Length: 142
Image (cartoon, rainbow, N blue to C red; front, side, top):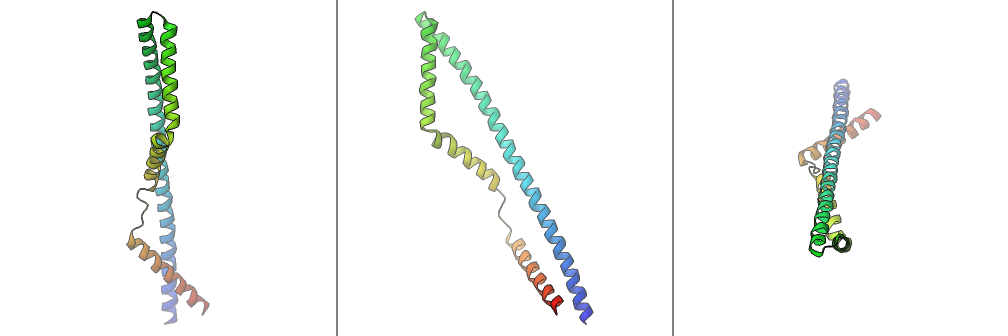
């Protein structure tokens, strides 16, 4: 009878150990998936900002040439264009937190936290395995 109990608890311990190792591997894979999503989001945002930068540069040149044609002075045209960009830069610096920082941080946090909730069945199974391990340790002490 004691052999059956010890055999049962040995097998249960092995199963619990395998489960915990598999669970650890699953957590590592989920972390790698979240990291890859975050890096993909990061690089796509960098690419979008780079393209936006080129659009702004060329629009600045267009505005500078257009005002230069209107005033017959490219110096005045590009000075007005630079002044416009300095004004826009000050506005962006003034409102950078609500316009840039909060949306980007929320987007990144949402991407990293998605699918992190543990299934209640898995949580109950983990508690049961922990209880079984404690019983096994208790029986081994006897």
